[in-house]
Each structure stands twice: as C-alpha cells, then as structure tokens.
Length: 325
Image (tube, rainbow, N blue to C red; front, side):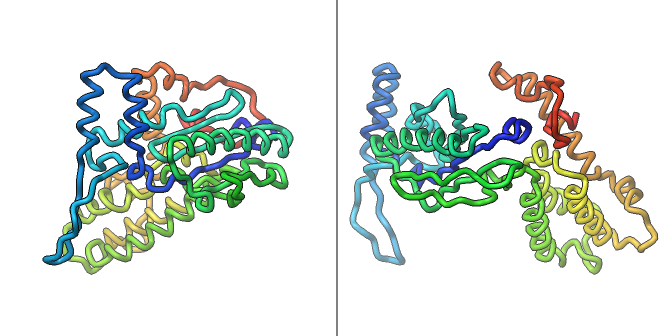
C-alpha cells in the first residue's frame, strides 16, 4: 500500500520451492542445529532424522528397503519446525522486504524508478540463489512469479533466478489470496465467486429447493462448506470496493433464497434477519474487530503495531484494514 500511496513501483518475486519439506538436506540441517542446541537436544533430533527407511507396496509386490537421505517427516509436529530452523538464515536486506510462511517466500523492492526497483530485487534474488545452492534447496524458476504492484503505467523490468527469467504476471496466488497489481482484490473475489458456484452445484441436491433436509441442516451446510470459501482472508480483501463486495453479497442472497425457497417478494434483509446470518459487510467488520483484538493481545510485541492506525493523510481513497474498524 505504501508504494501505491507514494506513486512508486513495488517489484516482487514470489518463489516456488520444489518439494520443500521432502528435500531438506539432513547434513545441512544437523550442522545448523549443532550450533544452536545443547548436545542432548541435538542428539534427540539427530536420532529423529536419521536411520529412516521406506518401502513401496503395489498390491502384493514390495520394493526393496531404501534409506531416506533428505526431507523432514510430514505430518509430524517437528517437521514444520525443523524446516523453519533450516531456512531461518535466509538472506535478507534492509532495502528489501522478505516474507516467509513455511515454504512460501516473497521478496519486495520499492522505488520510484522501476529500473532501480528491479535492480534492488535482482540483488536480493542473487543472494537467495547463492544461499539455495549452498543448502541444496531447489527453486522452480518457471513456476515463480514476478509482479509489479503499482497504480502507474508500465511495470518493472524482468528479473532472473539462477539465470532464468522469472515469469511476469498481473496477479499471483499467495497463501490462498489472489493479489492483483493494483490491490483491488477483484481477481480474488471473482475466483471465489466461481468456486462458490461450483460448490453450490455440488450441494444443490442437499440445500436446493427440492431437498428434504430441514432448514437448520441446510443452514449448517452453508455455514460449514460455502461460507468459509469467501470468509478466508476477509480482514484483507474486505478493503475491496463496494461493487466487488456486492458480488459476494449477491451470491449469499441467492443462496439463502434457494435454501429457504423464499418467494420473490421477501426482502433479502428479512431473510438475513430471520436466519440470523450477517451480511458480507457485517462479516467484514466482525472479523476485522476480532483480528484487531487478537493482535493487541499478541505475545509477540512486533505483531502489535500491525493494526495500528497512524492517522496519516492519504492521497488515495483505497482502504486499508485499519479503516474497516
């Protein structure tokens, strides 16, 4: 948002790490753990990683026994923690913003000149490329995405990873949210509306007008299956324009009419009231307030300023999450 507000260019790279959890280099991980843990803890984790084997069964046929030389056990409590420890020393820079969540890694560089923004991003990618090779981590260059976030015309020059050009796009899917270059959330809302239509058709025999299920069970299905599709990330995409939010509100109106078999003359407001279901905008407000309260009580003091409203004079009418409260 700062780059949009400041008429700048934000060059970004969303990296795709190939088989991240399955390709953790055991020797490299143990080297990092030995420097950070006591001998007892190191020994426990070493025994947890080493001497693991697997076989493959197809029908009655069994393969030979093979030794697992890389990867952390998926489905275990320690697996994600070990991966985070393995990647904790990912190169960062004060001139860049680096965001990581498990194996999803993003790098952002902001500048008023698109060429300089790309140069800053390229330097960060070069450092990360060297780090990836050192620790035997494979990045999929052709599945990574380069997006320029800006309200201005044009985009930043392309960047490379391992001497391969990173594909440029106008939007990217990150942590389940679709981010477009202008941060309008239109792509995200359109995609969610399409998913809702597909899921509604699958559930029509259960929640449709001819279904024999009780109204309570129909509403339960809506809340358990359909509603979570559009409420995910609502604290962020809730800043979208009124016209985009209305796309989801119209879906909910249509779904409630189908569930209740309501005649045409019954107002949508009455349906929401009688079913005790909030509108989309009411859900946005409720989730944002709850999120703000959680952030204010968060044990990590670095997280608490995330929802702080600094009351700065802004050039754009675009809302930020703090405006929803």
